Image (cartoon, rainbow, N blue to C red):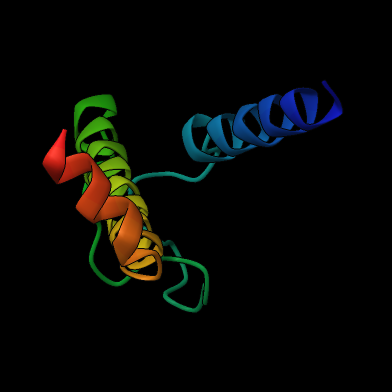
Length: 84
């Protein structure tokens, strides 16, 4: 339960940090702001959802690879399932 609330807190913090209010104007007035990105691409909910979906696909592929590796360590179990 603690892990759930911790994950929820981190996701909430990241959402606020990502979509929070940006008080700066459209252009860097001084040209000396090191935090100002050189090239800016708008972050949209759809674009971020696509990135999260790709991350989920990679995590699922990683899980499948570990499952295949785990199954390769016990070949006798795989042979029993093929006979049934």
